[in-house]
Amino acid sequence: MMLDMYRQPDKLLALVDKLLPTTIDAALALAQMSGNPRVFVAVNRGADSLMSLKQFETFYWPGFKAVVLALVEAGLTPVIHFQGCCDTRLEHFTEFPKAKIIGLFDRTDIFRAKKILGETMCICGNMPLTLLRAGTPDEIKGYAKKLIDVVGRDGGFIMSSNTVLDDADPERVRLWIEFTREYGVC
Image 1 (tube, rainbow, N blue to C red):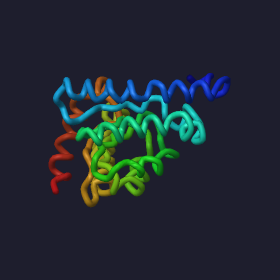
Image 2: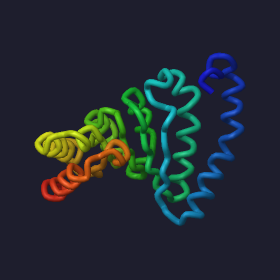
Image 3: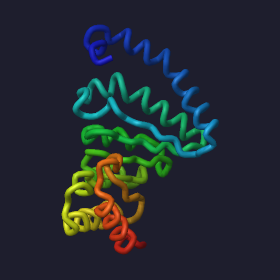
């Protein structure tokens, strides 16, 4: 696909249009089979480092937006894992229906995401795995506090890591959870 954006963009757009109804139908069928109203969606090829903003707007955004809107229209809650850095994409995500989506952010500036998307979606994530693997207790508590104070202000925030915790130190994770429970109470 990355090469096709340059070599045969018209054919790529035609393929996206052709596959979109099947993609939406498959997503809705899988969600119905699971019985879970929350649907995990990974944005693993739309990050800033993988294509230009113009390419994102042309090849990625229209189809991705259509899938997310179809899930919302079906009464489902997309939980979108915005992998990598999506800083230049944030304004596009304001086009999603308000209060219908959970956005899990990996490397995106979560504080900027809160400013732009705070009224659009529930924001989740961004506790760096590096802190949970090798951070000091003060570093872990300090960053958790900043997330709660800034991103959690006025609600709409779920504390989470920026990625899976496979390589995290269990004691550091326990410290993070305990601090969040104590400090993050509404």
